[in-house]
Amino acid sequence: MKYRNTILGFVFIAFCVALFAVSVSAQQKLSFSIVTGGTGGVWYPLGGAIGSVITQKVPGVEATAEATTAAIDNLKLLVANRAGLAWAYDYHVVWANEGKIEALRKKFPLRVVMGFYEQPFHIVTKEGTGIKNLMDLKGKRVSTGAPNSGTEEQADYVLKALGIDWNKEMKREKLGATESVAAMKDGKIDAFFWSGAVPTSSIIDLASTPGLKMVLLPVTGKEAEIIAKAYPGVFHKTKFTKAGYSTLDKDVDAIAITAVLVAMDTFPADKMYQIVSAIFANTTELSAVWKGATKLTPASAVNQMAPEAIKFLHPGSHKYFKEKGAVK
Image (cartoon, rainbow, N blue to C red; front, side):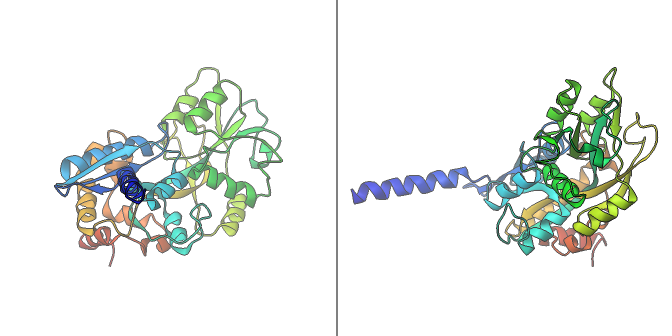
């Protein structure tokens, strides 16, 4: 019986090791998943393009994108060693190191690989719902984002800051961007939240729907101040413009966060340096799925992040950005 239990123990250990998404083969090939988001957003296709660049351009490294419910789910997978790279937001890195992310329950040494883009917080409705401002969401059918996503997290921050209880004062749904758009087209919801890059394909799809006039609710200056005071270091002010969504009649005041690629501090520094180098050397390939890649520079990758997050740059990333003069 003791021998049998020992064998079962070895089998269990082998099974657990096989589950890890970050592995090194006998030939020392580093293989890992890039956890992204839903297929209707930007993170999944951009993560796939980054994975292709890494696999093709970085010797001995293989990366594959994996669809998830987004940021919080990504962080859980990352700290469980089931991913090598993950999409998240700059404030997540700071909070993870300080033990302030409730879903993680304790401190984790996350590191920023690089910043990618400002991610405005979309609060989407349509004409005919009677929704003119954020307080009008009370009593309406509203999707607050997929469970464990960054959208859901940020919707929670915004609504709590404004004193709106999403369980008691609205009819809440928990849908991702693609599902929210489909539900709005079908008349099943009146509004939805979405944290994503501009332009987001599913938002463009909604805006181009015949017979439907999409509306992006503004976050006014006073509202932005209330939210910023309640959750310092998370959001900054921005605007939606016609350059992003051509159907807009005018600019719309908004709030935003910064999307970043993150890793654990144990990710090999030499490989991380090569990965960051490969990303910047192949922005043309990335621009096929995200137009903003053509404007990505070492300086912009660093400067768009909160100063607190820059302190947590991965050593391999820091080496690259220091060589380019983006950090000291």
